[in-house]
Length: 639
Image (tube, rainbow, N blue to C red; front, side, top):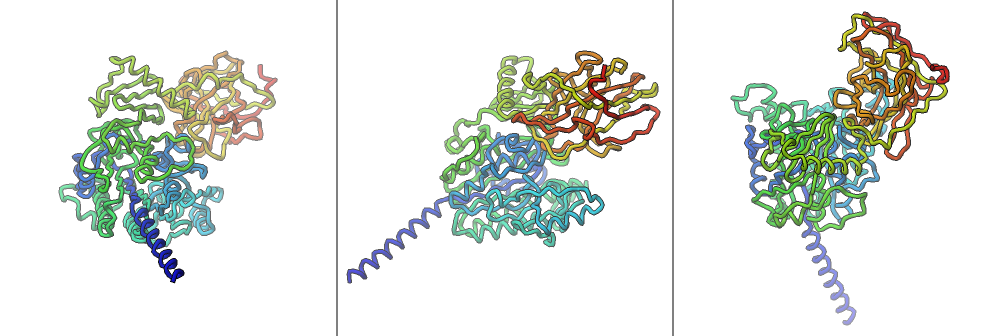
């Protein structure tokens, strides 16, 4: 009898424990993070846009709109900010797209997983390359059979960053229908975890939504973190006929019709996801976030904000964002606190009552206490660098710093950044510039439009073989005529904290100015883009390389130059050459040695150090340039 009582008591306690455990598990909120791609501030009709977005509008009315939520001006950095809570420069991405997220970075998915959540990602990853599996490698080889030297650089894949379930593609700008190739070439990029699935058919957004629904249904009895990075409304602009029929007949421009149909399609898919949460009784305790990764292109609308994608004015980095959590009455208001994708990792985990794992130092802040109370944001500033400028935003001010000027805007009064008030507020400019410098120092950013720190200057040290390049400029060559003489190439990439450095000299009988050393994209015969352009490629002496500055010591004197590579990071520097400019007849004779990339930890990657590194070709004479020669000589023989 006693044994029976004890057994029943044990069962009762066990049942009670299971019930309590189930109640605790149920108390943990689900998280659904909906991320649009290239959706502008006024691409949603709640902000006055012309494309009806009834579901998104309803979400904005139901939830709390974050009026000063920021990301980056292109997609990969914003996604990395969300995933890691760290500035993209710290994790090897930004300011441009691309970059492979290191496995050493702790992600928001890993954090939720450690707190008992099931994690899933559905859509566009763009924080790393396609995994190198036998099936994908075969598809890669077949797709690039006309380029047998093209190398496959495999990535870790989304699952390696804490996602239990992943239906994703890895590039950017993929076809929306069955091919799902990036840029119209290469292999299909579409995966279920590490299973390569080029055979799947259907409109990408519908596939994404279908797998989101499956994930929610499979995990309805346990907490889940569901990251939904839609592809819409990124180019190529492709819509289903059924969605095109929903667009107003008065919209006759083909691009605008397709754009509107795509936005409408996303709105309907969001409605489907929210309806499933309602159907399963999960909506009350689900945190739903809707936002974008960056501003719209010229085909969308960022009004009344200035700029758009590829710009760090507000239209490029300030994003339409709402967060809704019925259980905590996070509803029906706006919040003006400064915040962004950078803050979502610590904030969402705090909202879920989770324990923060050990991470590398975060830049993001937990805004949950301020958001819940409607108080002041703990975010003091946001920092961006993009091509020929960097910018810093505080609650009141936005400072843009270019090579030759600054622009200051009072964002509280002038969110459209229409009136530059730098002249009226010199103290604010000085204070904000100091904050920018602190960010730069903290990130180790190798800015391309600002002179590198004096500590990086060094004495030139040519020795052994050095490169000699000569070219004659004819009387017909005008200042806009240029000659590119390639001499080296480099495999591998660079990040925003890398510098290019080299030793340089000109012969006594050479033209003294009108040339510069630069990486470039494209092949040797048809260079497509120099890495250094006006307002970029500034050396430690404050000189723009494209202006072809003279060496400081004059002819016959070696000079060391250092230039930041931030503007083109993360990326590769496949070709290096000397660029000669016309305008003054004569002959250039230029010497170069010790071309290399200097990394933040002080190590270097050589590009050209001696003759064995030369990668050049014979260049025929033209009516503008002649007698072009590339050879190595002994440093000791240079007078």
